[in-house]
Image (cartoon, rainbow, N blue to C red; front, side, top):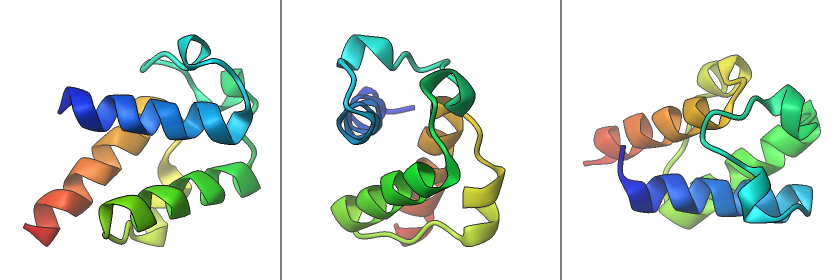
Length: 81
């Protein structure tokens, strides 16, 4: 995992959820961060726009934690090449 990608994902989640970055550890679950499905979609859409990629909907619906978001983003970036 790229530290830059991980930090950017955490920052976007913190901004969307309006919490300090320190409250978004890499091992946090969506449940612990009170991220509902609408917030998750907004977070993924923001990441897709920022990185110029598309994360397949099947992956998005399976992601339940910060580490999973990072992994999906890294896979999409690798496919983009």
